[in-house]
Image (tube, rainbow, N blue to C red; front, side, top):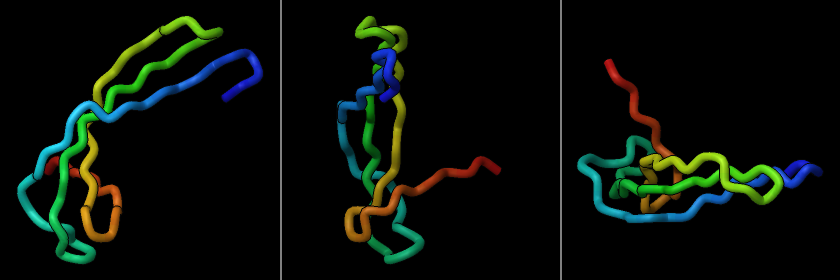
Length: 67
């Protein structure tokens, strides 16, 4: 957070099981839908949805690479 009142807020919108296993520990993978809202001087500027992949056992964030 900067001194001018800039802020980013992330909230979890949904969670579901994703196909595949974690390459580090072999645990199940969850797809988490996250909504992020950027604010400048407490006024909302941008609202985006992202999908993040997390392992349920080791809690690592996994990254997808397109080939």
